[in-house]
Image (cartoon, rainbow, N blue to C red; front, side, top):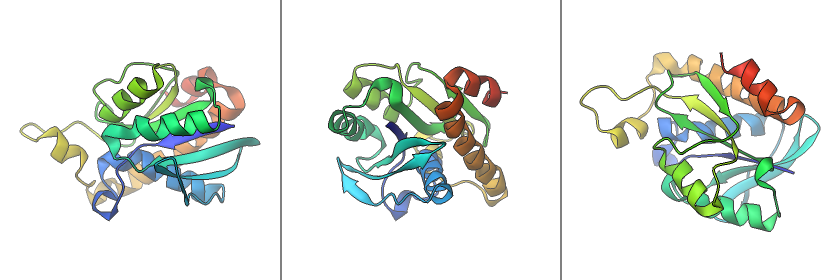
Length: 186
């Protein structure tokens, strides 16, 4: 079973913020594949289903971004999942809004949610899909930027990014990470 985790912060206060891009993709996957992400367990919300013929567990950690690894460590242990079966979806300020970047592994790149996951899992060898949210404007505080909401004129761009991210998940499951990187990292 694949564990597909989208990162974000819980609560209405953070809904629609740049930092919740991972949650948005999990919501899109849940809608597309009719998976209810409402099981409260392991300090997160999760739901089981099937994507591209593969059993999956969609996960939204409810530990806040900086402690995402706490939830994922519990999920990975409970399901005895291999690190090769983990896909993490999260925001990336180094990418233009709506751009995707798929990676087989890598450093945290300054992302506190990924830092937490690496610390709790003891490895950076997990697949990831990064969703571009754009770099902070000069003079802005990074926290204010990532916890801010997208301007209305970017909504369609972000919706299309969510749809492409769903395609990238299915591509990883059917064709593997290398094929997915070739297809989506353009």
